[in-house]
Length: 386
Image (cartoon, rainbow, N blue to C red; front, top):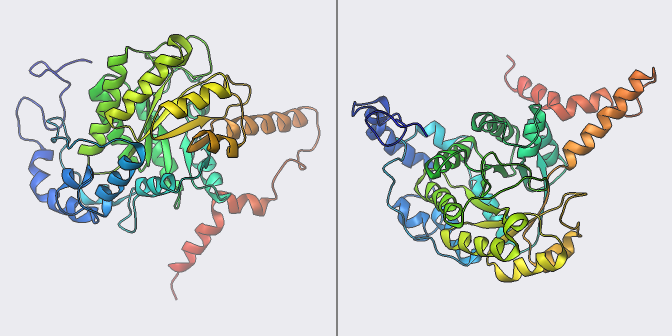
């Protein structure tokens, strides 16, 4: 991290040689508007957010903490917290000013006590398809986003590219919540906080932060390494602080890849500490068999995710069995990407061989409906002159 010449951290909008900034000037006038727009969490932000009061984000957080087996400590506002956001940024797209936030919807799904099937998406279209088919939750996969940009999942795609994809995905979803792959947080603990806040602003309901050494890579590929235990916990603590200090709620999933290099005992130890640090969900990547999966669920409190990757290191189990073991979410990270690539290669081969692809294609009317033409026409009709 490159520091400013007069400061110990990279300069921000409110930290440039002590000069007054637009953010500082707007702070007072926008603070009240932002608080009003936030609706359900009137009253002390920290008190409600960390378990005091009822309703809004405070109630959501308190319920999640109880279910996860930990209680978040009230955190003082960070000196690095950004200036208050305009009310429009607070309202959209996370809450839209109506009903519960997407993070609150995610917390409600988790609290039902039955496993959630979560196909993963990598762009706005695949996210829309997941919702269209009736699933209640999706996840912006870093593997898929990397592939869509033409790269393997080795952290060659930047934070800004992931953030732009998150905005696109959240704008395409009508109702269901979406997790975002936050990789390593793109730097030190301060960078982690910025990443969490950015993902929350984009409208994501949750973010996953992991303990790999940067540049990270897919959890089922070779060459993985993890940071020290203390640094891993520091990342998770920073992510939870960003959640608790920020204007928008977001669910924190803490991932460890320590199983591959440090062993199962260390991976479980890290997950246990992640829960103590405030993580809402843990994810132990790539357990090798059902016995390891069961031990993880027995020894780590709170919600847990299973990663169902065909031909990966972890056995593929039916969702009913995953629920019996103790998992709250069954993720299917590459299904849409893999199936889509296979179908496209088949179509290209048919074209190359001079054959028709019509048997593989959607009817044009169905295609138009899936990409949103019919919804557009309905909106257009609403505003035509009468």
